[in-house]
Each structure stands twice: as structure tokens, then as C-alpha cells.
Length: 287
Image 1: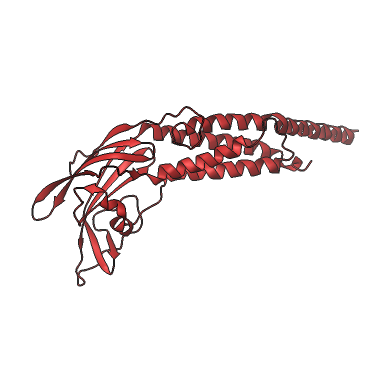
Image 2: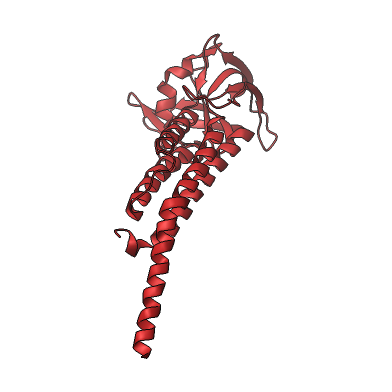
């Protein structure tokens, strides 16, 4: 008799779990997808996305980039519009036989593209397209199907967030030989390299003074790709080695970038929470 009761309890528990799983597939998955769509649409308002019908929040804003230590080796006033730095007025102290204060600006009509923001926007667009392509009320048949969709969306959101939090690292060789070093008027001195980039919610300007190394000089360790290259970094171009003799960094917080990272994170959390719920019922995925 006891075995019968235990079996009946187990069968009832399984029936209840199956009903909960069916309810999850029928109702909660689509509810989460609509919540996710709302979050991603709000995030998209901070980007210049082609064909977007959302009210765009992008506007041109001026920022002053200064050193957190109060040093004035580098200063810059820039105008940021979406993923473009439209204007920049910059001063850099160059240490030769005596210290010289070099001032320069972007040449008229030229802009500095912040690729990290553009890449983040592209991944966001891909995630949003995937979510909106799923018809409201679509009935998922298995948990495996739900997890596959969540994994795809999470992959895009993770890549989008990583573009901002861990952006692509550029070598000094890339910077020194890049055409963007020619976009300043007056032209940058040959021994000066500058780089604007995004790191999390900040816009950062790195300014480097370099000089060629003699072949007999002791070679410091060659610089790897990095967000910021410290003094003593070495790079090679056309068989000539150069050393960074002066490195300075200035930055400014861009509030809307913090909002964007938050939206990416909330979207990832919604996906992960749904995956966790679905996984609890993994034994019924094929039922």
C-alpha cells in the first residue's frame, strides 16, 4: 500500500511539473521576449541605427578631456555625436630640448570614427532583429528550441557589450602608420601619436611622444596591443624601432554609454533567467 501511495505521489509530482513546463513554454517565454524587445529598443535609442523607428536620443555634445591627476601635458575639447568625434581641439606638451605646447585640431570636414560604438550598435541591431523576428504568440515546442534562441541573442549581446568594456586593442605600429594621424591641422609632429578610444563608459585620449632607437641601444620589451601604452613601450616599423619616451592619458565620462552598458546587461540577465528556468525542466524538453 505504501509503495502505491509513493508511486501515485511521484506521478502527481511529475504531472504538475509537466504542466508547469507547458505553461512556461506557452506563456512566459513570449512574455520575456517582449520584455527583452522593450529593453533593446530603449538601448537602440542611443545609437544611429539605419531604419530605426525609435525616438533617437543621439545629440552632439561637447566634452573636456583632462587628466585625473591634474597634469596638463594633454588637454582636449571634443564634440561627440553618436560614434563620431566631429571636432577636436587638442594641446600636447612635447618634450624636446625644451618643453613646447603644441596645439592642433581636426581638419575641416574630417571626423574620428569610434569603431567600438559602431560595432556595439551592429551587435545590438542583430540581437533586436532576432527578437522582433519571432512572432508574438509563437509557441515554442521544446526547451532546446528556447535555449538555442537565448544563446544566439546572448552571444550578440555579449559581443556588443564587450565592444565597449573590452574594446579591440590597437598596436603602436597601427596607430603610427594610420591615415588618421594625418587628419590634424596643423599636422602632428613625427614624434607624436594620438589615439581616441572608448573604454567602458569613458572616452579616452592617449598621447605618445616617441623617438627612434639606435641599433646598438638596449631594446626594451616590445609593446603588445593595448588600450594604453606606457612610457618605455617599443614598436617597430620598416625595420626601425621606436620607443615611447612620454605617455599621457586623459579621459571623460560619457553618461549615455553607461546607460547602454546597463541595457546590454539587463538584456543578458533576462535571457539567462529564462534559460535557468527552462533548464530545470530539461527532462521534459522532448515531451
